[in-house]
Image 1 (spheres, helix red, strand yellow):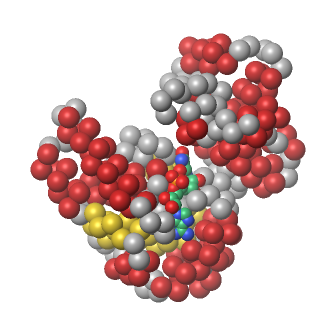
Image 2: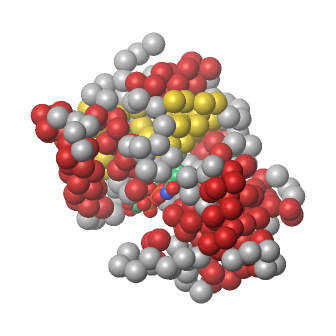
Length: 288
Ligand SMILES: NC(=O)c1ccc[n+]([C@@H]2O[C@H](COP(=O)([O-])OP(=O)(O)OC[C@H]3O[C@@H](n4cnc5c(N)ncnc54)[C@H](O)[C@@H]3O)[C@@H](O)[C@H]2O)c1
């Protein structure tokens, strides 16, 4: 089993930034690449702030923070990824764009032991792997959760082409990053979103049908089911547009209309109320 020294993260947004951070803290060299100017600079600022909070809270030494930051290289050219032993893709959740990227990565990173992992929340791993052509057996789902530095789980999803060795290495790498890997098969939504999203969608139906108001729906689920966050608050955090997108993937992928997004959820998205990121979704977030 070859050693992973350098992890490349493609996409320096919320998830990519977090993945890069945990890899660097775990001692790996990291290259963060983003196609959009300014994104890597922003990511650098997020790393300093996030790791700074760990130091402030006494959960990390300043020297360890400096060492972790020293292991991250912020790249603006795709060619900079050539020295990577492992790639985690965390770009926009769009099948066409992801497939183009995997075709490019497969042509660029031809060494047989380089794994091409995707952090997709819902797109078929098999479909992404197919775009990688001869490298399909090296493509795997490595699904981190938000916020990555705090969330324990990595869902590991083999596509039908993924080799067993790649799955084992993915489990080993996630463990090395301090995470708990759990395996799921490549069906729409995997396990996490297959179970979570219909529950969130149902909370919107409960609101739409007047079963209760949002505060009561969330309060009941928090106190009654011991959830740290109610389903409607969680929907705002994830992004209501993303929730609709994932419901569409479930409905299409599982061929079942019971997974269609609730009309009220779609209506809020149409009104631009996307959740935390727009300052208003189900709830309001002044100042965000
Ligand atoms: N946000 C979540 O809660 C969450 C949780 C688990 C998985 N995911 C998945 O992680 C991925 C990223 O999500 P995010 O929330 O970090 O998104 P984001 O919008 O914060 O970041 C995406 C980044 O990718 C960059 N990008 C877009 N196209 C690119 C390309 N072709 N090449 C290089 N960079 C490109 C963008 O500039 C942006 O910086 C998605 O697949 C998403 O479904 C998200």
